[in-house]
Length: 110
Length: 113
Image (cartoon, rainbow over all chains, first blue to last red; front, top):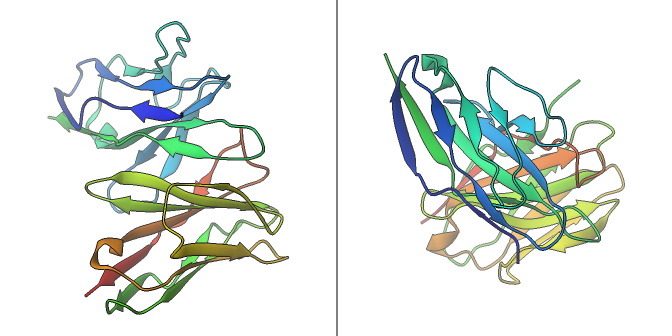
């Protein structure tokens, strides 16, 4: 069964500190992994996806198939990074079924 | 291009009633997915439609149903509403599905009293 686990509901860091939002997944095939972000009063939007291997707003995420993890990292947190972050997995045959983790609220303190 | 549009934005219904929510995807997108978002359960997948066919379904009771029209617009229906159905219902569209970005609407906030 597909499952996405984000162990931290809330993560609070100081501005300039490194950030790592954890994500572990369970899936028997080859999943597509994503990170979505929801800023205050805005709609949920894609932050990055593992197949792109890109850095968005300073964030990166590496898919570790051995550890079944897709942690989101940023070396220096900014106040504007404060938001709700969701890890998502898309897989399955015969169509599109994206499963989201419970989300981690990141709070960056000045 | 216009984003995903969900109507209505807010809805208050009484237990036992039924409700229909609407989602207009981004032009050209053929996949529409629905999610229920609650503080306790987070984002839960309801179902996905592609070219008027339901391709995937989450673990929700049969009271939750949906459909997609030939113009890719989708509706979600909930019958015999329960208090626990109070939630933000999100619609997301993507061009084909699996490995493409999903674009979300702002949601319909349903309150069941």
